[in-house]
Image (spheres, rainbow, N blue to C red):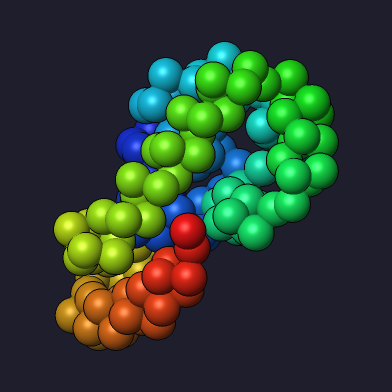
Length: 125
C-alpha cells in the first residue's frame, strides 16, 4: 500500500499489518495499533473475523486488551467497508506497486474480481 497514506478500503483483505495500523488511526482506534502489530493482525485476519466463533472472538479481545465497545466499533467499520464494496462505492485504483502501463488492465481485472468478493459478502449476517 502507499506509504503514509490510508490503505484502499476495497482491498482491505490484502492490507499489511502497517495498513491495518493506519486504518485503526482513521477510525479512532489508534491506541490498538501496536498490539495489533504485535499480534500480526493484517487484512486477511480481519477478513476472517467474520467467521470467528464466540470463543475466538473473546480470545481476540483478551489478546488485544480491547474494550467491548472498541471491538464493536472495529466490527462496524469493517462492515461499512464490506457494504461499500458490495454496493460498488469503492474506487478501483492501480496499486502503488503496479506499473502505470498496466493501469487499465488492473482496473478491469479488479472490477471483475469485485464481483467474486460480493458473493462472499452476501453470506454474512
